[in-house]
Length: 259
Image 1 (spheres, rainbow, N blue to C red):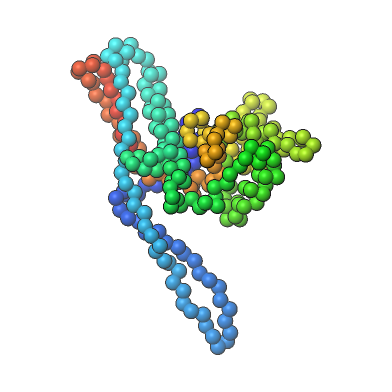
Image 2 (tube, one colour; image 1 turned 45 degrees about the vertical axis):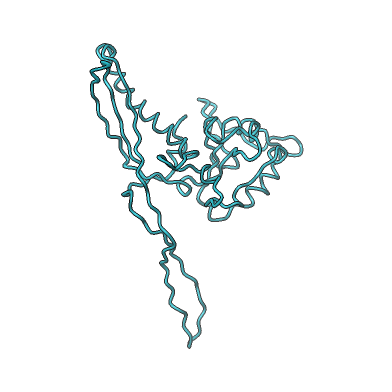
């Protein structure tokens, strides 16, 4: 359930607090004759910079002295899973809604800015009638996707409710469904797709709303290339420490991560 977004975005491991230049690398083809030559082109130009700040996250798990005494080995194995699940759930939430103050800045937070890096023409509004009409999907979204994005296998991110209630119910003028069953008849596992694009489900309440419940201006889906859209700069590891709290008679496991 958790980590659907975090597992797909780019992971970096570079020093924070340092400005890294952002540049472009391109050239232009020119025709020449036997007596002319083209101008020399400077192909590396720096257009700005990016600086990563440090944000520290912590998870503390307490275990009473009694439970520590009678616990079984299985509990210890579950501890790491509990820490990871808590972490990736928080990462998914920050990727969408992080404030940028003391934590990562989320995509939806960035989109709401007046000078957002997300272009206004990339924010497409759907009415209830548009949502039911496959032609509107073709003209308002799919027809606008540039070739450079098509070949990089973009994905959808939406709630399961939107996919089941709005995408799977699309039909043609003869009321024939426009989607194919994508589940494994042996084990029932479903591979959610829309026009052969992968659909990643996000949980309700994470800023991407169910379309039928959304109000004007709320986001009901993303169409994105995760590794191009978002990056997490991290030390790629948890520092863990276990100690005994004399006041509460509890064993405490503390896990720290920097990103």
